[in-house]
Image (cartoon, rainbow, N blue to C red; front, side, top):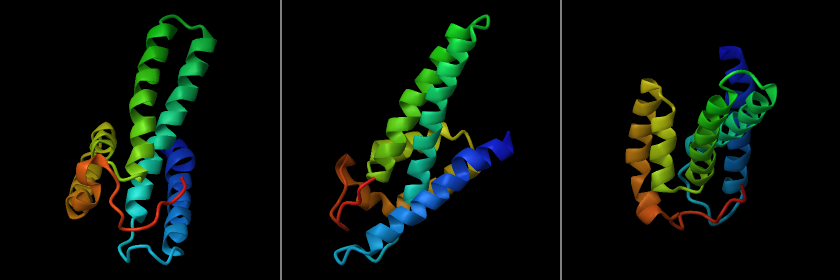
Length: 137
């Protein structure tokens, strides 16, 4: 299971976050503060939401006993994780908090709390602050 998570979520999220950060840095109006970790956290959530949605479809089509309840649970996770991950990359406060809580990982909670506290002013009012030009996600 760990290798699957590493291959399907962690590595793609890391690669995509470095690509997005590189695109953000190429903009002359970009802030000198990096947002690589923010892109990584958001992409992790977005990918987990997408994989939960695919797993829900797979479980529903498998037709096992109690498949409906399992598929519904996976769809609820997908509905929470996917949009929260997307909007975490857009620097929304609520999305950052949701992706952190849904991780169910105390180490992740600590890292995101420290990072989020240092960047909380960038997340003001749930809307992205103009510290850099928008990055197309």
